[in-house]
Length: 617
Image (tube, rainbow, N blue to C red; front, top):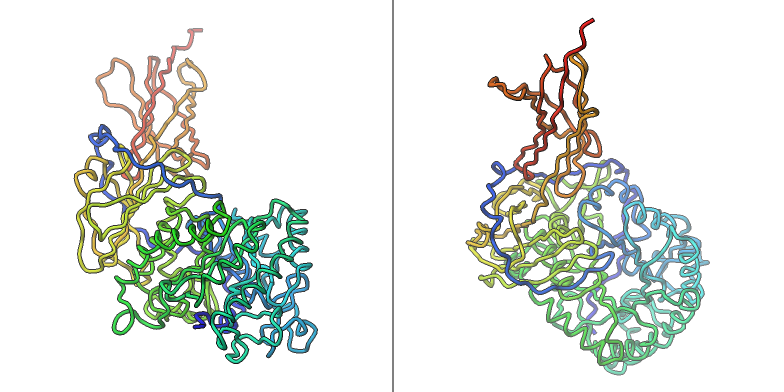
């Protein structure tokens, strides 16, 4: 068997001090003034309803050795990128860690259950304990997925975790996976006598592939069943997950004799299985793209194989008696080794296409591996080292996003809770297209030009209507950190006539809800010299305007040829604003409030007040 995954022990994080929060994604200047209403009349073609997304479609992987301060520092950025699931495990670390007493045996030579009481074990060193992890997930508004220790753990440990999660709402878990990559000889596995991970002579598949995989798969199916029975006894509705083994077409995560594993495990434990965990790494190269390695364009276009891979998984689930089981992509990235892709624009396009392809195919969730590594502890925008991660892990200061983060930031405009996501067909086979009807009624479309050298002009059938906001990410228009997004506006009519996509780019198109503006007076009439008090509220794109948005207010005397007096106001938090004014004389006055911007549609509202002369005394 070809071992595609090495031990993750070398990936452990330094105890970094970064605790600040900084959103460092650069956003370019907004586009021109809001387009005229001509695009509003464009009829929307029919588009397939698509897949309804789960409560946690976009996720990221963390480990017991992740610094909690890192997650706290990244909270705003993770929320902005729509991260709604955090996967707790840490690769192989999941099978080397006792969550109950924070004991880690990854530094032990044998990595077996006996080592938990040995001198080589470390205690209270891993910073991200389960309770702390849960706290961070809840603060983010994310659900939890946890990989329990199968390799050197016990069914009792797993059951205790389920029990604690059930009785403690703040530590709730959406999905539990039984061990990490149990099909591999790099993984600790006390259930096979005399076995040591990463020792070639101990690997059953190295003696006889078929017989060896049968031994490993049957052992896992038998013992994992005892784990799952104990876990279900604590929470009958717990979603239990087992590893899925890929064939050789998934180069960076292939498993020799994978069918033997899938049939034995999925078929043998069908009554317990709610989902399978797909680890998808289309490549296994290290270093830079190009030369003997795949090109950046090949990396980006590799996501086009995802629908076929999803179909293989579904076929295996159906053949083994669990056609309704979900697919969770519990780890994903370009390669299981460090590459320069996270330092280039290709990382953004790959991450966005990866997420949207899997979710549009039907996956329950997709988790990027990992949040950070030690590969970029000395990161600068001009000195980015090959990596796998979404963020840097600096010795001091705040972690900075690598290009996959930008991909998730853009994909999250579509990959939202309970949205309906569809894959579309663009007029160019170089362009990936997706549409999402969001829970709030908006429609968002993503267009990804996978060609790294040539711009594409495309048409694509969508359900877009009226005015649209745009976000554009292009390799040819980047800052040093490869995180620059430029916002703008357009219309559906313009898009339907054909849209130009720069080479190696992502364009997000999104319908915009009408802006609304209210204005009321505290009284219908006032005595001359009295102060008129007006109150209003501004809503942008269906949500209350933030604090500090300018609203123009004018006062016009009815019947007067003189121009209006201009007042001004700014919104407070929640979109409300207040204006006070003393009219110069008796009469009927029209106060008109208006909002205009290139970012949102305009809005206006007026109110009439009467000012009467004071009685003579």
